[in-house]
Amino acid sequence: MFKTVEEYLDALKNEMRDADSALVQDAQADAREHLSTALAVAREAAPEASEADALKKIIEEYGTPEETASAYKEVERRTSPALKQTVKPRSVLGRFFGVYTDPRAWGALLYMLIAFVTGVFYFTWAVTGVSVSVSFLIFIFGFPFALLFLLSVRGLALLEGRLVEALLGVRMPRRPLFSHQDMKWFDRLKALLTDKATWLMLIYMIVQFVLGTAYFVVIVTVLSISLSFIAIPILQAWLGQGVINNNDMRYFLPTWSYPLLVLIGFLLWTTFMNIARSIGQLHGKMAKWLLVSE
Amino acid sequence: MTEITAQTKKFQKELNSGTSSLVLLSVLSHSREPMYGYQIAKLLEESGPDFPMMKQGTLYPVLRSLEENGLLESTVEPSVSGPPRRYYKITSGGRSILEEWLEIWKQTKKFVDAILKG
Image 1 (spheres, chains in turn yellow, cyan):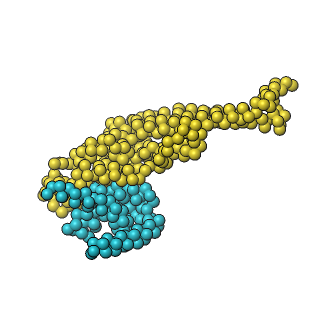
Image 2: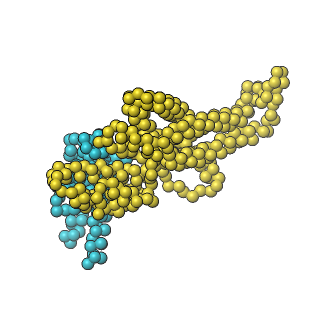
Image 3: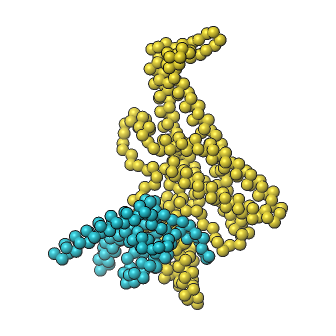
């Protein structure tokens, strides 16, 4: 039925087409590891037997693609990814203010701050790596250098995936993408260069710079404006400073507006927390689209 | 006839989904060295050659979920031929959980045996 391991993997992928793409990638890695090992053992025991025959027996023991796919889906249903929680239906107000107890909102906020640092790093790494790799290609050692760089991109993509899953709660791969061990390094470089996933990862690394900077600026701005509103009563009543201090002129807001100002500051920040949570979810979707190969 | 086999298969599958975590944890607690999936599958096959307890492919997702819950830990090592292998090792948390599970298993076994005897 299946002549090669690849055929089985394709059937398994097809069987899991509705499943989470990160889960599919993990299932592929496990199946590839098991079937290749079993095939190598079978070949050693009976070198004259054909690969298809050996594979038939191995798959009989491993399970059909349907059986394997259902086993993964079953286990995944029982173990929920990080930060996933059952959401109880709440009123609009409850949902709005409930954002403070939602770990996804705080996770998204933290992620947006971290994205500034990682974004700068990824961008530097990608731009330096690409330009140095391309210019080194006129030398012999340029090829292994390019290979190392592209492999580092894969590693960084996996790391970023772990960060995204931990902070944004979006399921990401837990296994590195497979690359053939027995290939010559030149073929490996070619395979990496022709793989769409490599380029998508590089795009993500560059986009992260723009997004990370924007996230950071927005967080700092909104946080300072919200805190300023909340601080106006303190400034005016205790420190004697005006809202606007211009030379000798100090402009004060009336005392009756204090509760209103604090409320505005608080509402502004709460609104932003809600927006941050949505941005986090959107960013997770984008990360999945760019970093997880189909 | 086919109806009965389907029912039996389903029963076997349901039993396995409960015991597989216990079996895998126990196998890894007995092993001194970290083991990879194929090794574990072979060992299970040798322990009960006439008892097709579960398809080998179903072991892997269980191993993964045990790792996610902190009962196992794993490292990836390159292999001479073929893709890299994931080696699993039981954690100290896994060992203490295993003791609790064994106790539950003993009690369940005693209870079911007593009921079956009538």
